[in-house]
Image: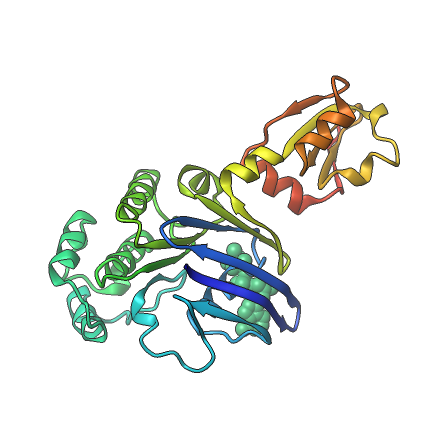
Length: 290
Ligand SMILES: Nc1ncnc2c1ncn2[C@@H]1O[C@H](COP(=O)(O)OP(=O)(O)OP(=O)(O)O)[C@@H](O)[C@H]1O
């Protein structure tokens, strides 16, 4: 069973259109949701959280379709939003006293351990916390009510590199018993490189792929060669292309095909996740002068 499945999702805003997005969050794994600013990541997360309704399509959570207000579902999710969802004027302690009763499985001891581990002083007001500290508080809450699914919208934004690394390790630890699942959205692809098992890539409201990280890295290649290779039949084969005065770098989504076409005529390299995202988002308009 998947922790969540999104099927045939369409959503229109004035200047944004999400078209037929399908993907799953597999149980026991970390799924990384990537895409540039405005791709639709938060909108998809808000649909899973029932904060936004799709125009068409449906969301399935823990095997049940979210047709009506599905009470009880929220409790099974630990949600770390990219926005401050707490009351600024309250101390952490008072905020916690308000939040805890909403969860039947609230684990006060676990929560206290996280406050200590994250060095969060209970008597500090929310408004006096740094962005990173707010995120840590949000994370402590999300990890303290036996949630089966952790959903984190850009959790590493605003975190220093030391805690970012700690967070990634901590997330990996959460999956030890294979009962939990994690959806982690980020445009810092190196974070996903480190911990994601699956990658869901969206761009301009469209799904580019939903695959294991290994599959994604295996099938994509970065072809580097001289300009003379770029004839009109070859150009359309690239998902993204960057040209200079003398040569080009192009992303292809099919390694076997790239090797067959270019053989030893061009350099065929393994792109990083960041390069895959960069070339796909840029498309074929990139031109660098050398
Ligand atoms: N309630 C809304 N009303 C109008 N437009 C909206 C609304 N919510 C989102 N949008 C638009 O939908 C698009 C996608 O937004 P979304 O926040 O889902 O992107 P994102 O991938 O999370 O981006 P970022 O990485 O910048 O957070 C944006 O163009 C945004 O302006």
